[in-house]
Length: 283
Ligand code: G4P
Image 1 (cartoon, protein in one colour):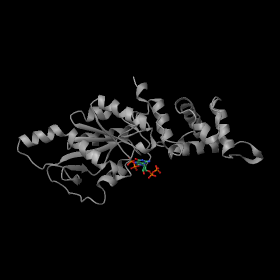
Image 2 (cartoon, helix red, strand yellow):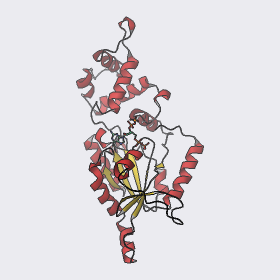
Image 3 (spheres, protein in one colour):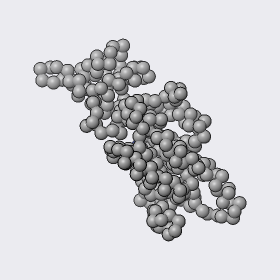
Image 4 (tube, helix red, strand yellow):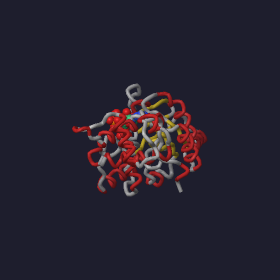
């Protein structure tokens, strides 16, 4: 799902989020493990400041395992609970369940002291478009779980999904807006495919990706496309075109085709597990 954001959309999304957050104990925020900072919107820190916080580093199957581990420490140091995830599979369920209970431990103990038992933790899922919110809700709560229905006076018509005896999830995820003002953020979101390709210059994007790969992932371009990595990015793109036989009429190299191919192989994980943003580069 791709979005074009205008100030009106953001105000509406923010207002909805403010309302929904009042109903919950825990914010489950999805970030993209390949760009854990650029795929977040720090406004959620303000909106959810009274709530327990869990960050799910989603699409971890596409990210460098080493960098994902480093990012998890980074967020933990900032006070978040963190779990890495491939939302398409159920394998992370146990970790998430444990993290939810841990993150809400204070609330659960407070309830217990007051004699309240079996009141489930209420959570909502938030994140920027395409980060995997619906996939997560489907995998973890979907089909198998019955909706608990409206709770008049308390939830004002909101639907809750019972994850298990301890956790209820608001059935509609909160959509956060990306922070497009920062050019790097726009670039990274474009690279992972979160911005409409029609409004992007794929050739430029591929050159940026080549620059990052040259610096951070030496030998990836050499091994996959027999590219000579010490060259300028445009020449490397030429090597990619040659290695994949991207040619136009008259045997001219088709740089645009090579660019699209490179981006596609990156997004699908065929280039390997690649993280674009690094914790040590955050100020
Ligand atoms: P959203 O609700 O936050 O907007 O995201 P959604 O669940 O629709 O997921 C967006 C795309 O990301 C989907 O691909 C989904 O399968 C994929 N996805 C979600 N979680 C993961 C994950 O952990 N790993 C990987 N590799 N992919 C994940 P799609 O339906 O094919 O859409 P698209 O690829 O055509 O955009």
